[in-house]
Image (cartoon, rainbow over all chains, first blue to last red; front, side, top):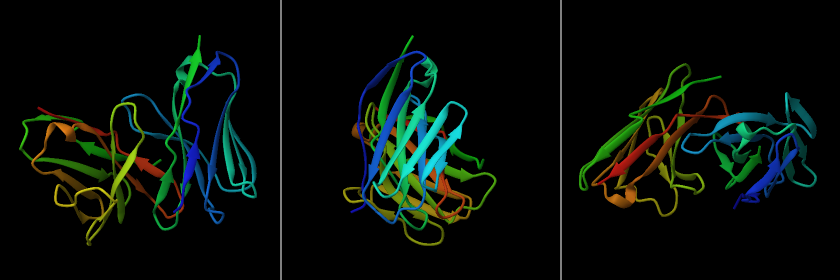
Length: 110
Length: 115
């Protein structure tokens, strides 16, 4: 069974620090990877997608993918209290299906 | 990005009644939609895959006779919670991808409270 694993946290970082969120997946053939942010009481929203090995940057967010290690991460630079949320890692499972990790709760302390 | 809407955004009902939740893709056609349930402070749990023109596929442990899914058009899927009970109170969210291998677009969710 295909799986996506995340540390549930909570991960607590001070304002201005770098938050590092990690995710591993079981299907070596996976090709598409996503990070979503979910605020409490809201539905998930896409932050970034990544398809190739290496880094992809978008503003304060950097997604890193290492297919050989089956590992994908999200770095948030200059973390702000507004970044406090649950971050979901997701992996394309073929067809239209995506498998989601359980999420990592991030707290950014002011 | 693509837009997915849900209606209603919240609903309160009495135990034993049925509740219908609609999920619409507003600017794209979705042959497949997904329904999730999320209890407070818990993970997103996939309930079922809604397939346009065919039967839904339910995840293990989800009662298909209790959670009726209809995907009658390329832009609309409905989830009906039949004979709702307080334990069905939860946050129900739908999602749809535009293309295979690409991101899921989530609806804003429907909060159900069964009294």
